[in-house]
Image 1 (cartoon, rainbow, N blue to C red):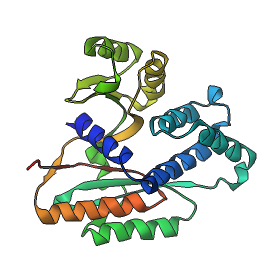
Image 2: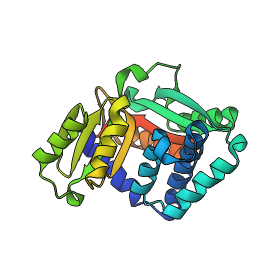
Image 3: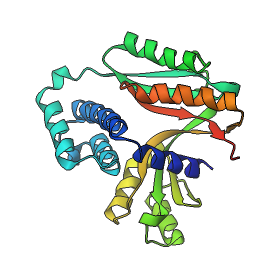
Image 4: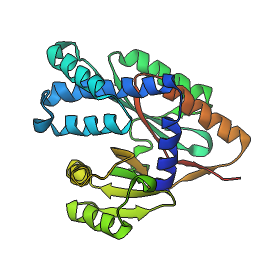
Length: 245
């Protein structure tokens, strides 16, 4: 379920308009800046930067935009003052939501995140109130249409590289890793020319909450849409699934 729903969400994001694409590029640009500040501008010596570059390419970010972002961050490291902050809360029917942000103004971000929850009739909780319902894992999604390799061969390659689990969905393959093994597994697949629709360290729900009523769907969509519009928000993880009609 998780692989399929994640892949559907990825496709939905990539089909969005240019404004949404600009938001994705802003998010990745901040990640590049933080990675360069932490480990330097040379991806050969900076694992985190290599992972962010791979994420950028999977989102069709132009190479010159990536290179400009690295050079800008390297030339002005003192100006990179983004802080990581995480908010946890509840949506309709007790849906668990985790919001990860990179911000240069925590007060602004906190107010905007709280506003998104409030307008969708949700609520912000205390740190740790829902994160125990998720497992932090490396997650690699591969579009079946973009992969010529046999499923068994791909599975063996992933497991040999250090993956924990492999799942085949209707339209995608999902590879799960321990967070510390994520980079090495991703790079092993990359060296074999495997195209990845998405590769990131994610918070994977242990259980899911099914939403089906019109009110529930309005509320969760309101929260997610407002969070999606917020530049400070890097990633949103939730344990909801929508019941197919």
